[in-house]
Length: 217
Image 1 (cartoon, rainbow, N blue to C red):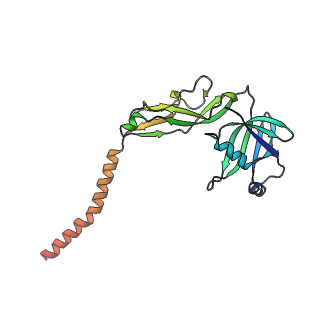
Image 2: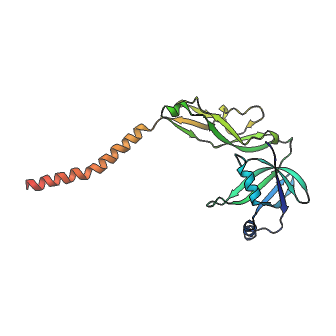
Image 3: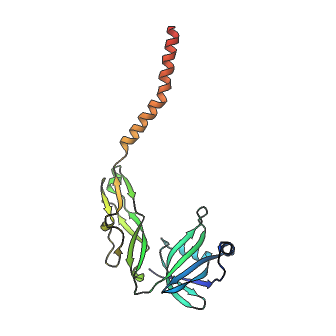
């Protein structure tokens, strides 16, 4: 994965009110840590960081951060906080990494192809959207593709079935279900339709019975 370059400035004042003022000014509060050193509070250009995210399939990526007064370091985007309603960027955590030391990350999963079971009327269910793996920083990938084209109805893929290659080490539970193809829900739909018809038809039957009784009387 190719590093993306960012310029960061150190910040002294902290707190929610101060962070809001920074964001209104077009800067993104963050923190960079690792290598056994104390965390450093930093500021990034919000628009610049948004552009970085837009050009990557996942927020899990390596960036080269030039911190004023300290030079450039390679860091992993460890966590990006978004506003729950507007999705605006709120805060970012960066973890310094070394080329020869493995990192543990959650990699995004993407399915490719149309499952044979889906063509037959089944439903594809991606149970896990990320997979925990370990690798060297230089071997980090943005996403892992899962070819589901040969999956039939009733088939299940576990974490251990995902092809990772020699450079990625699986950390997730090998028996965890990643993706499955379920049977069509025809019976449930038919039962719901019958129930709806019965519910809507009941008042009609009662009213007709009452009308007959009135005529007889």
